Amino acid sequence: MTPATAAKGPLVLPAIRAKMGSWVYYITFVTMREIADRVSIGKEMLRADALKELLQRQLTKRSSEIAIYLCSQRQRFFNALVVGTQGGRPQWNELAIRADNRLPDVPKYLEGALGVLTLQGTENFFAIDGQHRIAGIREAITKKEKLGSEEVCVLFVPGVTAGRRSQDPEGFERTRRLFTTLNRYAKPVGKRDIIALDEDDVVAIITRRLVEEYPLLVEKVSVKQNRSIDRRDKRSLTTIIVLYDVVDTHLRSTPAQWKVFKRLRPPDETIEALYQRCTKFLGALESTFPPLRELKASRADEQIAGRYRHPGGGHLLFRPIGLLLIVRAIRHLTDSGLSLKEALRRVSRVPMDLDSAPWAGLLWDNANRRIVSAPENQKVALRMLFFGLGGDLSKFNMNSDDLRRELAGLLQRDVSTVELPRFVGG
Image (cartoon, rainbow, N blue to C red; front, side, top):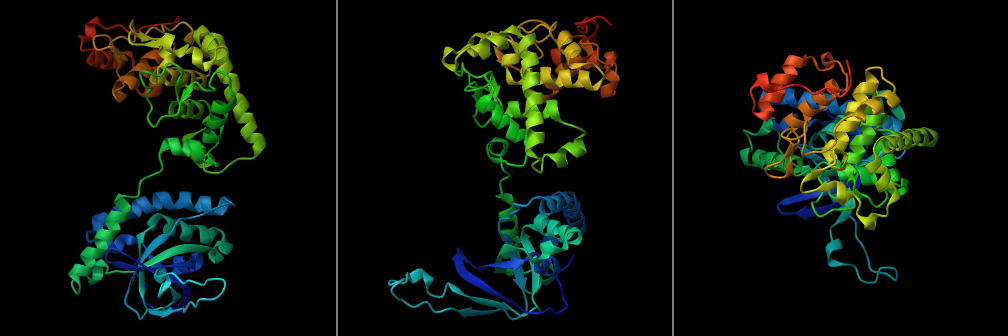
């Protein structure tokens, strides 16, 4: 996709002219059809073919997701695209604003700010920020043509593409810097913010409701930014980010289907059914583990969680990685054909004291009295737990000897001294 060279019809756009730093830019709106037809993707900022190919792979991956969003979400909305313009003969015509009874004092900054931007159609337009959205718009319009009439905010800025860098090297460097700056500082929405605000992701919706309504969790979930719990927190069972992962693990279907499903809000009756599945699951966990029942029956200010999460280690379920570990193991067992009741019966036999086998040295550092949260330790812990509960390690493309070697390496012991725990017969 390269900048269009064939002349197109003019665009006459209501606009605001603004300035920031050394950039003068124009704020307006353009239909999705015009964006799809006229604006090329930001490969014009890249010189090497390999980098262009990399960008194209990224665009292909994301564009389908955005197209699904546009075609399926009635309350769809985009933030502004930043589009570079090169060549042609853009014209700016100011609109005069006169003082009257409704606007007796015209602010100074309005002088020359409002007007009509006319683009002749011979300009080259290229995306500086919003490449994925433009690719998604193109794909969506092929599936749902009426989307082409919908309008998106666009910021037009004068720029120079890689093809013209020899004629204006300083202009190209300046444009490329804008391209990289916008993409570098475009911070993805954090997981906690998604949980708090997303009205389409069913896992986020259910997580919020559990925190607000379910007795085990009301005022007993940390809503801080990270996954770990503050040492001073004696109230919380876990964090909201880990609770989201717990709900996601319990409810998910096949990865590809589930990823698409979470992008679009399902009917209310589906949300209710999934919520009931989660409360039933949590109720089963409470029946299996008395400390959870104790926490559920208590007030938050009684700080029951502090009894089970302390400097000496405490209960596995009262550590975020421990709760998620148990839930993931249960899901692997049920995926392998066990009923939830049988999976929980087996899990009930697992030692829960962090400072003892099999968790000491793997998930708990007795010398330093802290959790060992390294991804490799968590991965081996899950496989060891699954195996100890009667699971088939071929699910992870390994056997018991492979797992013993991994465990020995993490424990810094000779493999001959390491035995895998078995919590049930088999």
